[in-house]
Image (cartoon, rainbow, N blue to C red; front, top):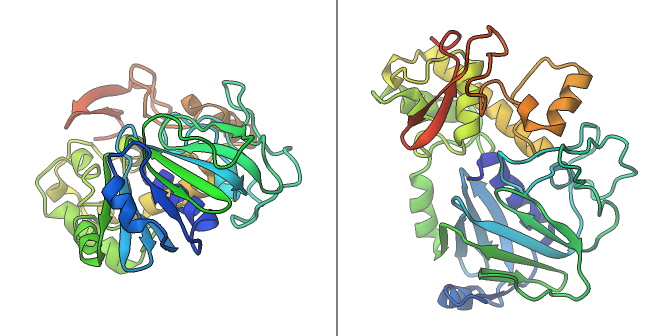
Amino acid sequence: MPEGHSVHRIARQFELHFVGQVCEVSSPQGRFAAGAAQLDGRRMIAARAVAKQMFLEFEGDLFLRVHLGLYGAWDFAGEISTDATMRSANGRIGQTNQRGTVTDDTGDADETTTTGTDAHVPDDAGEDSLRSIGAPRRSRYRMAEQEKVEDPIEAFPPDPVGQVRVRILTETAVADLRGPTACVVEDPAGVQRALDKLGPDPMNDDGPEAEKAFVDNVRKRNVAIGQLLMDQSVVSGIGNVYRAELLFRQRIDPYKPGKKITVKQAKALWQDWSKLLHDGVRIGQMMTMDGLTDAEYEKAMRSRADRHWVYHRAGEPCRVCGTEIRVADMAGRKLYWCPKDQK
């Protein structure tokens, strides 16, 4: 399932290519025909990500709320001019499967061109996500959980491929949505109801009030902190990878009840989550290791096996103490931790 940084990056793609444009909205699959008819012909005026949900605002106080879930994906095609966060990741935007990225961090996130690929690190599958860097061109991008596909297209708009729940089309770009958990037209009250169910998201607010809300949400519950971090009503955007890595970075036992987490520990978790989320949006990868040499960093960007402290490393020695990393089920998801360092 895409974690928070991925959904924020997808929202940026809508900001680049759809906000301000009148959109033709349809449902090639037919399942969203009534909702598409409500939005068709309206101008998109904003794109916002909160937690793992995205809200596309249209004229007339109508919103398209999308949650990709485990299998959802957005395909973009047309005159795609990517910003730095879009250029930086191999793999479908979303996640644990992303492989290589750009290691030169000097570019502005709003730039749409690049002068070369010297800073690019090829991924461990030999794929290259930088094939269409430069001036806007007609291309196709798939953005969601497992892979990003980038291909030139001969005709625009391209024919829908597969079971497209909703298609959003402008004169120069098209976005196709497949397999979401939620795809709903909301009014402002409905959007507010959805937002009221979500915990603080540091991409939208990382100030003292948001920090206090997180600390209070954690410390009032007698539930394991490893489970609380995955609860989107406690904090927005954390998934399985970030959960494991945050707890290791703060040396916290994932089974420790929220009520026993100190204020200092809770604040440190929030501040670390803010850092990792901002980093993930900026570089397009869930890089959770600090203090790497340049060579180690480039190696980590080539392969996720060198990018994390404990996630997906069950049975391997801890990078700090050498103890075997453990894995267990927690609330239906795999949990990774070091039993020695996380006491």
